[in-house]
Image 1 (cartoon, rainbow, N blue to C red):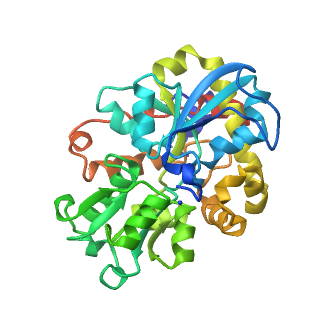
Image 2 (image 1 turned 45 degrees about the horizontal axis):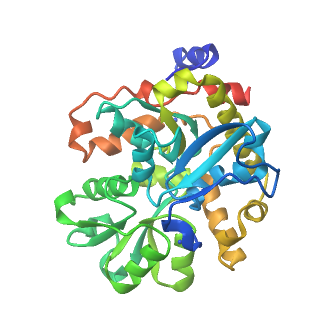
Length: 354
C-alpha cells in the first residue's frame, strides 16, 4: 500500500479494518452520457474506459451515479463505462488492455498477483460483499445453512467470479468440500431468477436488485445476508472489501494525474451517497434500471447502502479477511505469499478526502 505520512504514522502507532431490473444486465453496454446531474459526453475531456462487472448492479452503483452526477466531467474526464455480466470478465478486459480500469471486487487483485499480474484497488467503494445467498422456495426446507450445500447446485455469476469465491469459502467453512457441490454460472438478474424458478439451481449468490425481485416474486428466501458490515463479519469473520475501482499498477504509476481525477470523482460520489436517501439516489439513475417498479428498485438500493464506504478508503483488516477467504479454497493462493500492500493504495483517496 502506498500511503501518506499521516497514515504511516497511525500504522506505526498500531491503529491499523435482476444484476438489475433492466434487461441489459447481461449484455455488454457502454455510456458516456452525463445526465441527471451534469451535461457532457464523448469527446469532452480526457478519455478513460472502465469495465464494470454488471453496470446496473447496485453493488457497482457508484460507477453510473458518478457519471449521472457529472463528477467525471467536473474533473475534465470523458469516462466511457462498459459492462460485462460478471466481475471475472471485467478483470479479463483490464489485464488484456481493453480498458484502463475495472469496477469489480477487490479480491481479484490478490488472485491476479499470484498469477504474475500487478493490479491494485485505487478507490474502495465498499466494506462488505453486498452479496446474498438465496435458496429457492422449493429447496428452502433442505438448505438451512451452508452445511447443507452438499449435493446441491448453487448459482454464481461466473466460474472464477467473486460469487464463486465466496460460495466456496462458505462451503468449506461449514464442512463441505468444493467437490461436494456444483457451482453453476447463471449470471444475475433474469437469468439467475429463471434458473432458480426452473430448478436449474437450488440456490445461489447474487445482489440487489436481483434479491429484491426474488423476494417480491416469492421465488426464494435469504439464507445469508452480507449487505452490511455486520453481516460480513458474521459470515466471513471481518470486513470484506468488495466493489472497487482497480487498475494495473504500471498504468496507475504512469497516469497519476488521471487516477487522481478518477479518485476525486468517485470519493465525491461516495460522500454524496452518504448524505442522500435511497429514493434520491434512485432518482439519479437511468429510468430503465427500475424496469417500471421504482419502489422495488429504491428498496434494493436501501438494502445495499450500508456496504458502501464514505471516503473510498480500504477498511482496516479488510485485505486480511479477503486473503483468509481465498486461502481457504484457492490452491494457488493458499501456497503462495501474497503481498497485500501491493493490492491497494490509499494515495489518491487521501488526497481526495483531505
